[in-house]
Length: 375
Image 1 (cartoon, one colour):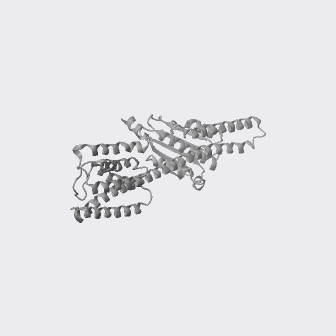
Image 2: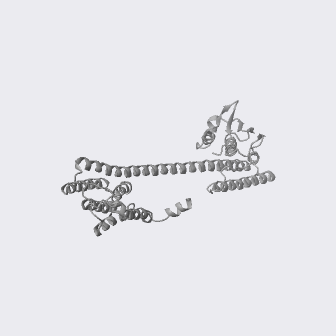
Image 3: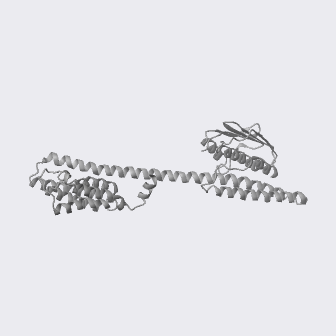
């Protein structure tokens, strides 16, 4: 069924509107339905003739363009409806008028107020003409019918407002989604570049003092090279995030991350308890970013100071604690604002808890991240 609907929607709107117009034409030509249509003015009915067939065609066929040219459709249908009522055919085709009004109220983009005024004046002229032809409708009947036609226009106008509101809502959602994606990429880029570049800078600074020790200098330069390569790998991973088939939860190994920090000259004590569950979702990725940012801050603001990393994988949450001796709170919280602030937002999104501050002469970062949340 969905394939049929999809196939039908690929056709032009004039083709989609044609069945309704043809159905009204056929219904109007059925003998049992003659003089069974709209009767405004209660004029005596007349038998079908050649003019009646032309009136039916003029009332119904313009519905084919009711979405493409709504004003043209309404004008033609209105003229045919007036002839229909003045001649007393009272065909089923008269139903086309409220349909045309709904379509015009929905699809007409310009001159809407002028159209309403013109249509009202035209209806008043028709009412006077019917009255002169001997109509027994009376003022009450004409006003009631006018209100019914106005309601048809109002339905179209309401549908137009609803459609515009939905389009605006979708635009805001799309804009918010793009902003969230840009923010996410900016955070990932900050985490990747800041950590690796900081490690490379620290190692390069240390290499300046190792010219007298070729072996250690060569080792340090090799470490810088390896760090640069890991940086390129992580950047490629970040670009892969733009691939819809790529999992956003894929991150590196904490052991590798800690070892890289050690090679940069930071003494790190690492303790890992438990293993990540299969349904950890994005919690494991967030835990990795928390450790990465904390180690980056340790390299930047307390290079050479002892650092401890403790990660515990529970059934329902992952807890992370990274402490570094000798880091000032003002220093660790500096920078672009994407670091610790970004981590807090990541953890908050998953419903966890995050804290970072001075403690016992050092700086401690703690995070409790609920697991099993694929958000």
